[in-house]
Image (cartoon, rainbow, N blue to C red):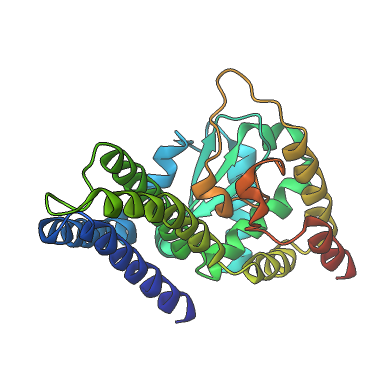
Length: 284
């Protein structure tokens, strides 16, 4: 119920922000923006998981292709009393993982090729248990919706910025000063709004998924060890030629932040400190 309320508020925020942006283009712009918001509300609720998986070129794998991975996920799903989710692989040497889907019956778990190479079987079990905890706690819908909304806001802000540069804001009746003010507002506020939407996903959900994942796997120490390795892997990550790169709009979905700390957007943390997460798990 709590996550459904958050989802509704996020969808309402998308509608409001797009209508405000549309208002810079006059009444017609407002109507067009409202229509776009309705389409995006529908799409982000029903298809946000598919959008995110496609964004990362995630490939669904069969049990024949990944028998060990399937065995681990199946055993964990049984312990958590969940349906077996679909399993995807993201081709990236960055060690990480995420879960998505609007409910447990439509869930998917995605792991990067890098995490399969880095972790021991028990550490990987701890990570997958964490992701299934997100599914069980129904965190996955709001995470995917937030990612979609942040992407839409960034896209529209970019579109409006170019319109401002070419004198599109304010319509024919707008004067030059109004155009400049509109440009500044959109250039500053819209990307910030996208960041705030990411941060609306409470950091406590990661602590909750850590605790629930530790209970599902029965190995809190394994998840703690995995988190330490993943944090180090993210910090020392050197992109390879064919790696799929993480997006700022979806950083909050991963088990650890995939962005380097030098990134400007990473100043706005979407994850609690890994050291604190490890400390809590070891205390279990």
